[in-house]
Image (cartoon, rainbow, N blue to C red):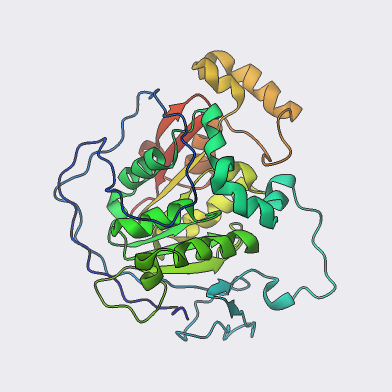
Length: 352
């Protein structure tokens, strides 16, 4: 069982730590790990430092909403919309808040999905994702899950004690680490793929501490861990209800990144942070975006390298404009870490 309105944890404000401080490692149920190449190149934007005077713990709740009309659900254990009369099932601990939940699509069929979306709905991919697939991103400069977790945690320091949505979570690689850190009152693991959500929950069940977080009957001192099958282009959360949204190595798989980022902006609270990692186009390896701008455009327009797991590649300028110009995030808040084709960036929603 999973409650819709979850009692927050009491999380102490973090102490002072240097910018490169790592998140303490805990025992997290994870398949056999393949050693990946550590990122060594950092551009001019440094990671934010952890402030000893960080905000005091918040009082968060997860406010799930109908994906049709975005009306928040009122009942704790009932996902039935009071306005459009749609009901959404919970199966094996996973709340299905996609439009086709419960086979509601009937005879209707969506147009063919892009390869980057369809591929990850395969059960085989969900099982091999952490057994070589994800570690192979080292060729592009991804530093590996431990380093990426540390970077993301630093970028989300202002959301500690609050609610974080790990969207397009895949097999829960980062959802588990965020939950095990104890820094968040609630971690919501979400993906569009049923097989990925099943795999995420299976890994969490294999860890005693995480398994305790998966019940709604936890004590006030325990964070909660929630599983929601959802479409990033129609997030089933109340507007301005989340403290942070994380998307690890996912944006290049989204059918419409602009629609997804607009949704992420909608569900974040004022001052909330969006953190994401993805693939830059191969010209990023040169390390001079101004010099390679024209070549970068030609590469992306050609479609070379797309297909399979990639719907598209990005340039840093595209990511800046998408987030701060199109979707209203603060321009000055954009910060990033880059290495070859790897980029992790963060942007903040304007405060009221």
